Image 1: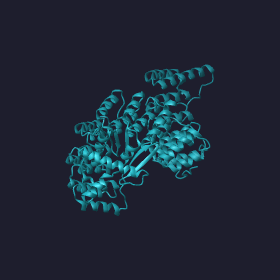
Image 2 (image 1 turned 45 degrees about the horizontal axis):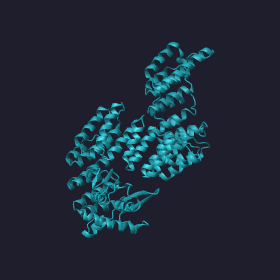
Image 3 (image 1 turned 90 degrees about the vertical axis):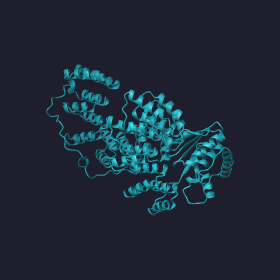
Image 4 (image 1 turned 120 degrees about the vertical axis):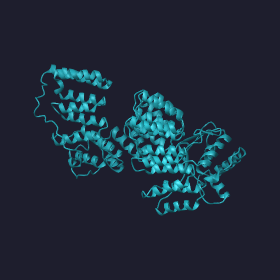
Length: 616
């Protein structure tokens, strides 16, 4: 079991002002003493449940008026259903008014108001009322209130606060309760405290779908894909099918991130069998999985088949279309989303700006950037980074610099990195050097920025400055990320690095590359050795660029995959310009469709053309 923090006490840790709650002593006794009255209020509760499920606001409000006229608002169960009704209709402050006017506040009433604020993503309010229950009413929380409190802590990503709530649960003996224990597992997982989540999970006498889903989500979130899949298998085989749409959502995202396309399709099939295919959570994950596997057509199909779409699902489809250069579809989806009453959030606008940036649509990007404020959203550093990237790629480097200087917050690494990308594309070394000075003044930065600066210098032939940038990286004890490419074949991932000769089929792979190289040269391919960022001779440059990791992966796929199967290659770094050209010729000479996913977007090569339009 997790050993929770015992100090400071819970009430001292909760950072809320003291708020007075009504005392129940001045209210009349509950008049539930005759059967006809009880039958009457239970009928009212059933009606309120129907209005809540159907989200009938006007009918519910009319019924609320009837309840007040009948004097039944004093009944705790009626009050509970009214609070839940307004909570589900996303009117939490109406629920709060009801709660404050309630004659009798039972544990169910407190549970309703805390749950109301959690449902409506107001965790601070939820914990404020949780604190008031403990302090003013001297009422202990139960197995309904504890899960709401821990969920609020998870929403705040506050591990210390969550651990304090866990401590109170231990003191009251609720830590062995399956509902409370499961919520604690979920809270630790969402706060990225995987060790604490696992200790709690392993120590639980009983587990339910929430505990299984929480621990699987935790491992998936932290990139521990193998363990997430192993736990999912345990939930299916040993956990008595303790899975739901949230569990499937986590596992399908693992398949997408790990590019386990065949396994992802099997998960989709299992969702169909278990009737989870119409869940918007599963739909979002399936769209992401198919998109990351380069099968955008199936992402569209999943989107069309799920009728009840939440904002997350719209955003998943927007980013999928943007990454696959389906820019027109991005704009159409945005209009359709607004027409059905779904309000965009900050992620939605990130998708829009990304789509504009990678299609060179400067005016459209400026339009969506200004549209954010009309929707009550203040641009964050990520939005500024996208705008700087858009301006930089379009060659508007001075305008991009002005935007950076006008930012209301301190520019982040992402912002400076976007500007450096523009400097590298347009070979503006003077501005790159200026950016480098500003970046290094911030203190330690990621290896990626050092490499970008070194690449900008090397691209302009200034190898001495490039060497200095790399030396600084080495002096700081940091390493450049190794470029890798991989393909999936027979449920196995085959990974390659540049010049790699460790694969069992190395001889056939290099032979295939030599044969293909001759065909490409006859078709007109000429290597662009300017992408070799080292000061070496022409022959060495030609040899170095010929065996980049994605070319080895494609050669392997040409050997192993049947002619009708598209080749999907995943890459952890950005594809270089020469490889981009080379894969065009590979596609033309072999007649194959080749899909390359780098760390930025998708490139679908067919008949010497790329879906990115050479703008990426």
